Image 1: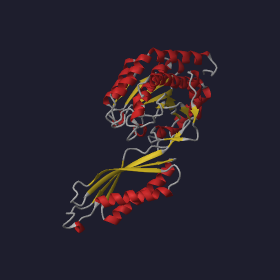
Image 2: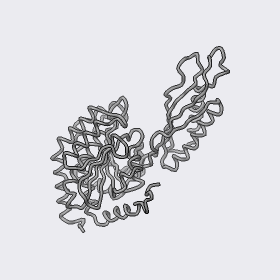
Image 3: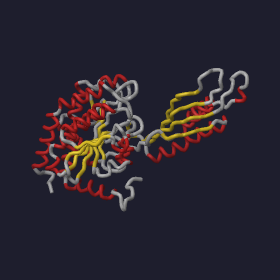
Length: 404
């Protein structure tokens, strides 16, 4: 067994770092290409292909379209018992492109996979680069998790672009409904009493949820957007469609919020006589639980690169489907920063900095730091055994599922 203080760790760090730096030009070019051609959730065909091709050319075995998701892929190198996953994100936001920096995220994970592949045989690891689509929408990681793509993974890493370097933060659990009310049309002037007004239903729902907000606990949020609420001013609207999104500090709080909000939506249907249809939109995102050892290892790696991550333990960021992964296996999701002149995620100004020199450095530094975490995990006997034991404990028994 490799000792934590053995020359193997220093050798592996050096080799992994050199492997990333040797590919730095290609990684930055990948980030720029993703940024220049943004693709939204489940339409990331070219984005996924770019990352998969880079891995394939580096000798990875690539499987595209995994879990019946056309824009997901898995790329593997090595055959060691310790399987380390790098999660690559690459979906953009409608209308504003890579306003969450997923071009940086995806390129950094690809670079980390290349770095670890250079030492995989010596360290007894398998490197698994997982292309995870639709983080901004239906939650590709949650769907891949449910499909078994993470069943052999002992630990999963990624970094997320941000205006600052940070470690340890949690995230809000999130879930969404597609909501529709169906009423009955009627002439708005000649016989309005014959109609059932779907616009009234959506208005009452919006109002009821607005009143509910003051009774919700801290950290529980509800937001909605109306897509349709009639078409002609002289016709009682027969259909209305909206999407409701709920966020909470934990999955348990999210379940409680769902019950309260559902009651508001049902009350609107009862009051107006409209028929309510609720459909879950994608997977629920769980709250993020970052592994302490992986977080400490990343902090050391980032500092060795001249970075000083802020400790955000006890704080929450927005939401991520990496939370679902973190409920099942040890996971790492720090942020890697670059100057955005105050611009925040999910805004057009933030997107403009995604191909800046700072973002380019974040791609390379993020890749190296993640690779160093993988090296430290593989060469720490106690932590390696912990992750393998956790993996063995969650594996299916007699063909049953290991996931709840």
